Image (cartoon, rainbow, N blue to C red; front, side, top):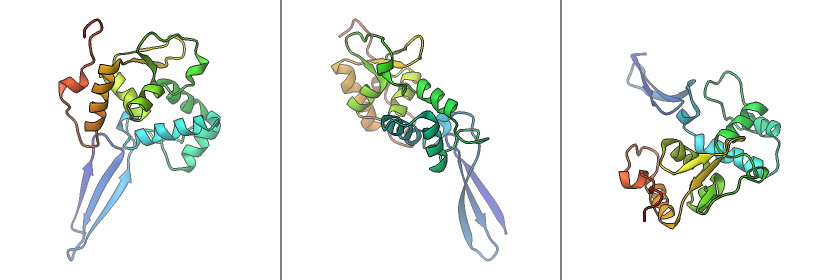
Length: 186
C-alpha cells in the first residue's frame, strides 16, 4: 500500500476512504463513524420518513425500533441500536407524535408539522429542520412539544420555492427564501 486518503463529510456519518496500492491500483470504500447529532446523519430525512410511515401503519414504538434496526438505520453515536424510548423521543422532537392526541386549537394559518410538510411538499424532517433554523414561523405545544407552524398563502408560496431549491449540497439560500413573513404585514 502506498497511501490512504480519508475524506470526512462534516454533515454525514459516512467517511470516504481511498487506498492507493502499489502498482497503481486504487480502491474506494465507505465507512461509518459516530456523529454527535441527528442533524449530521446523511439519511435523516429518510429515517424520519420511515418512522412516520411505520407510525401511520399503526406500529408501536417497539416495533418501529425493531424495524429501524433490521433495516440498517443507526442513531448518531452508534452505541446501540434504536429502542422504544429513543423512537418516542425522536417522534416528539420532530413533531411526529400523533397530533390528534393533543387538544391544542390551531389559529388561522397554523398547521401541524406533518400537514404542512404534505402541503409544501417536503419531508417532515426537513420542515422540522427549517423550523429549528427559524426559516418557518413556529411554536411548540407545552406538554408534548409538538410543532405548530404558521403559513398563509404567501408563506406557502415561499416555502414551496425554498423546497424547490433545497437539495443535497446546497448550503446557502437567498434570504427571501429563508426569512419568514412578519405577522401583521402583507
